[in-house]
Length: 291
Image 1 (cartoon, rainbow, N blue to C red):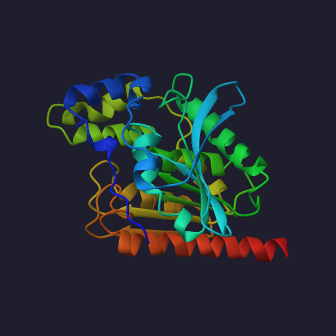
Image 2 (cartoon, rainbow, N blue to C red):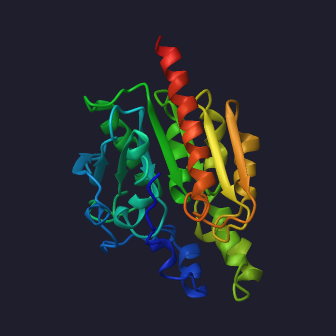
Image 3 (cartoon, one colour):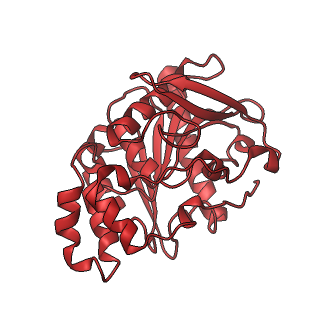
């Protein structure tokens, strides 16, 4: 199985107290998009096509399509995390084509080369646009489309899956369960903002599209949550809460010693086979369902 070293754009700019306060005071400051070029598929010898599609409200989104090596077992749509853009996140799923999965990596509005300005409601429209694009491709088996979201992408993927019944499975890595609670938790990690974390997060961050409120509607689509127990960006208890609220079929893997994004990187020898096993179970179930 091929290994690609992640650039980790989410770790390039540490969240100091000033940034955390901005995040808490304004919804728009929660997001950390960038147009910077972090990496490129060519540097890893990966085949891909640059593609575009348009959301229901007319925003053009930029994406990369990575075809499976050989006959595709299924297609994975990657919902990346908050900081950076797909040039720093595509390596998280760059190993999947060699495992016979097509992959679509896309940027939310305002990220990378995608148009528009990022908003919470906008990310949901972006999610549906990405799914609709993949389902419409002639080279995709529409019965075997899977979502894989990481961190913020996990929250967006759960929200989108809760509104659809045309997906084979949803896997999320290190998601948060609630936007206000995520900001509150991060504010509590700094002594300067610890005492006012609850007040500021509730005053400055709006409610809506929170995964904890809709995760129960993902079923009957299978859901798999994976989370490092040493995660210092999104606490693992949030995945536990999501799992408890979700309906069957569902799975939860809490990983001792793993931090944010480490399940598929530092622990790739364990994490990647675990994710592939979930995808395999989903596409096999889809084959049986389709007869």
